[in-house]
Image 1 (cartoon, rainbow, N blue to C red):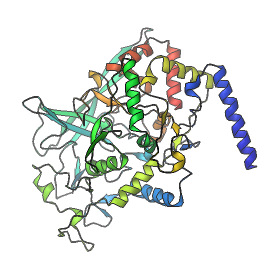
Image 2: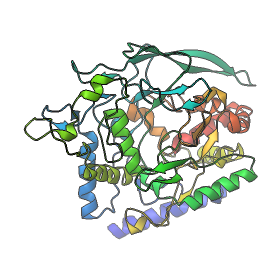
Image 3: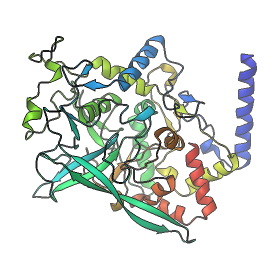
Image 4: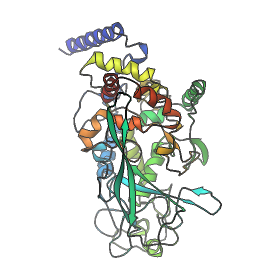
Amino acid sequence: MKVQKQVFKFLFRLTLFISFVQIGYGNQSQGLNDSGGLLSAKQHGDLSFMLPYEGLTAKLGKRFVKGHEQFDETWVLAPAPGVWGLGPTFNEANCVGCHPKNSRARPAKVGEEIEKGNVIKLGYRDGDGVVSPAHPWYGDQLQNRAAENRVPIEGSANISYEYTQFIYPDNTSVALKRPVISVKNLNFGDLDDSTIVSMRIAPQVIGLGLLEWVSDQDLLEIAERQKKQGLSGRPNYVVDLETDRLVIGRFGWKAAQPNLKQQTAVAFHADIGATTFFFPEKNCPKIQARCRELPSAAKCGGQGGCTGNNFRPEVLPSRLKNITTYLQALNIPKRRISNPEETLQGDVLFSESGCASCHVPTLVTGVNTLTKELRNMAFHPYTDLLLHDMGEQLADHRPEGTANGEEWRTPPLWGIGLVNEISGGLGLLHDGRAASIEEAILWHGGEALSSRQKFVNLSKSNRERIIQFINSL
């Protein structure tokens, strides 16, 4: 019976492949049903971002399970019972609070407080016009929660939207909204015009291991190829805190982190307030005296005392390792193609519009992978992991690493058609402003302006084919 199933599966794929070629699908898109290569799962639905790679060894499987448990685990303020290390100021008490079911955070609605995976990033422009990615009083991220009755929150924020109407040449229209952030309840001074305020929404966390394993050389070759197409894609160069070397960044909206371990440590520090060997100091700007004076859980003993002098990170290295393995080993849902001919036509239009130049369909892992079976494996994330100038309308004017205020990393598109179902709302782009794929495309500017214009000039039916294709990824 097992052999029969395998034969049927092979014949089905062969038949599908032949039909793709016959209708002009082209060799670029062959085999893209398995978006994650071996890390692909056929299950869809609201748990489809949480499934492990079936080829894990027993040791890695145990680490995956432990990492999943620790990803969901709620942190507390010492010396309360639970996992110590929350705060003194923070945004969320666990990883899943920002990434529900490993998906994207639900975008904040009008009048709602910005929380639960929606955060406020801050920057500061000094008198000489030099921009820093952190505010001297509030740091790089506004903390809206704190140790109750012991430390004041930094502040909070609400969101509203400004609407504009985009009209196509065929006179159909789409409402586009831009977030307007209202910061309030500030406890360490008002923000003036020198402060840069922007919002970030937590993205889905599938496929991160595959993106980590692509070689630097492959990314540099993509950047060189794009130059010949008139594009300016380039890597962000950031510091690897373990080696103190300047390396290519891959993770975050501006590719500001070089690997998953450091990205996880950044999230613990910025969102939960927990220390690591990467970030041993509490997330407390100098002006916030009560935040700095609250004893660190790293110095607390097992009986509730907090007077120790030896540093022990609140996030132990084993926890970072477990969560990193968990994120590396998550499967990617297989594509969902209900109408092959329409979807494949959308794929062709996607490429002809220039979208595939930055949303590169296929990347290949290198040799430093979780298991040897995953080495030199093609997968299909639709990203180049490079920075691109996306124009003034999307600019946040805040640098990160070598990325400037108009540059953003090309986000992967895989799984995008499932996000609304899993998260209970769709908020695309860095601040969640786009409630649909169409809206996200219409916000593209800068070096993506040409591709956007090609999309705009298509007939309504062809625009819908592109959207249907992207939803299938």
